[in-house]
Amino acid sequence: MNKTIYALSLGVFGVATSEFCVIGILPILAKTFNVSIDTAGWLMSGFALTSAICGPFITMLLKNINKKTILSIVLATFVISNILSSFATNFTVLIISRIIPAIFYPAFWAIALTLGMKQVAQKDIPKAISGVMMGLSIATVVGVPLTTYFADLFNWKASFIMAGFINLIAFFSLLFAVPSTPVIKQKSTQQNLSILKEPFVWINYLYVLLSISGMFATYSYLADYFTTITKMSGAQVSLVLLIFGVAGIFGNWIVGKLISRNVKLGFRFFPIILILVELLAYFFGDFFIPMVFIIFLWGFIHTAGFLIGNTRGAYKIPRDTLEFTNSFVSSFFNLGVTCGTMAAGLVIKSVGVHHIIWISAVFLLCAFALTFINPIINEKYEESAVGRN
Image (cartoon, rainbow, N blue to C red; front, side, top):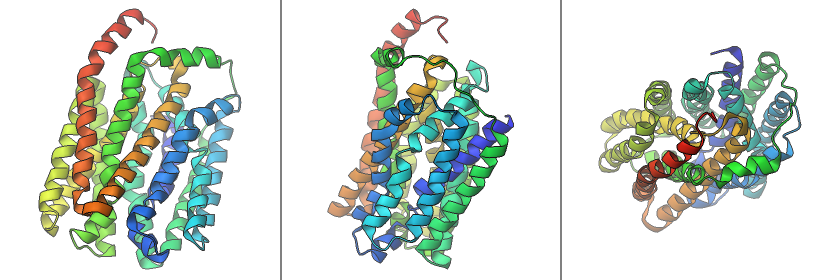
């Protein structure tokens, strides 16, 4: 990988840490602002829903601006947002502080993934995505546990300050390592929209929506699950989130290599394997030692899901429409975060956090079912698109 991909990965590390830093401190924020845990979950789902709605529109709006400039502005926005979040005096102010960067968040993902993909040959796109997405894995390894630890060591405000500092480092890295990308003649909006007429594209997006919903139905409430079911302390939650993230780095790297060889099998087996691991967490959640091993497996599979989802979103997409279609991938990704977080919040409110595993399994089984529909549609597309990629 070249320095551009590494810098983009660091940028992803920054924005992902900002998005997910509330996961480890959700119980603390709920208690601090005197709201229920499902209401606190809006700190995740509100951010994601804003990104989902704004994705394609903000990307098209910014299409004629230098890509490096856009990436820099987005990272600067995240720095400011985290500072504002740390000074929030009530829950409403905190949500608004998080929603502001969410408006521009999809543009960062679409541009970062597209620039990464264009660094390599078509056959190596999964590896390029893996390289950029490594920042997301590192966010779960370092970002989320670190911000959780700072909240436990100092207070919740320190968590947002640390997230802002990480984005500041990413900002300067991007300035020096990513070359300027002047705007070149791009496809018209009508030409870009034509790719959306293909049924397989919407099957891809639906798979992303369902698989991410399944992942975040549990991931958004991991801290609550560990403290309520496994009876972990704040320091122990930080530690197991670190284990979860370390496993994710291995998962991202190994699965990146595997799906480069057989991408279709990766799409099909990921939902089933994640369900099996989550069922282990359901039945052994009361036992600390077994849960440590389960958390490692969980992190390995879960984080690989980000790579699989983004690869699925770009699967068989012509390279000259990547930025446009990646904006939709980002929207469906964040819509999945919203659906999973909200559905699990309702389950927690009704029957308790232990049962979020089941709503996750429903989403993942639906994603699995889609893998049997897509080959029929995709085969017809391939016959009419020979040489397009």
